[in-house]
Length: 144
Image 1 (tube, rainbow, N blue to C red):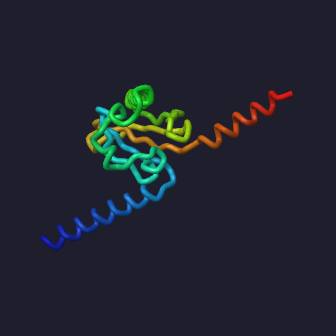
Image 2: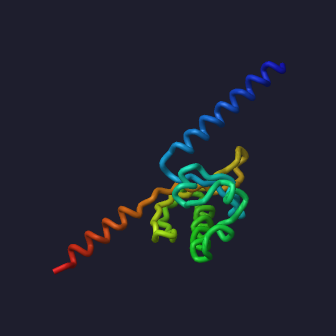
Image 3: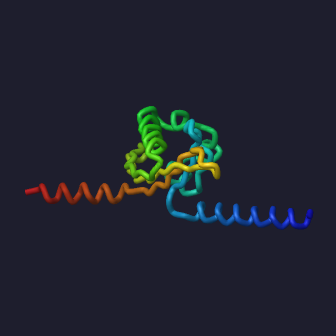
């Protein structure tokens, strides 16, 4: 019986490690928040994109981490996602010390095995260069 329990624990650990490696190596920011907006986890790319460490984030809300305007927009998008209970896409702006960055985030709600809503998950991609290229193209078309 104990041997079987050890095998199950080992299999769970291996599965968790594979998932953690997959999330950390993905070149998108992945984050998970509870229903009160507290971060449960972020992946390594989220640390890079948002210039914040996991230790600084876990257990905190957007209001504790970001300027009020940004935090309110993020929370509003979370609320829309939780109400819709369907994936939604948002463009979000962040001001870093070297300028404004644009991120496209897909957010979706998560349910436990009994169907109860327990979290919102986000997957974000940096689209700053795309937005800059679009703006440059618009400017070049409007120039005489």
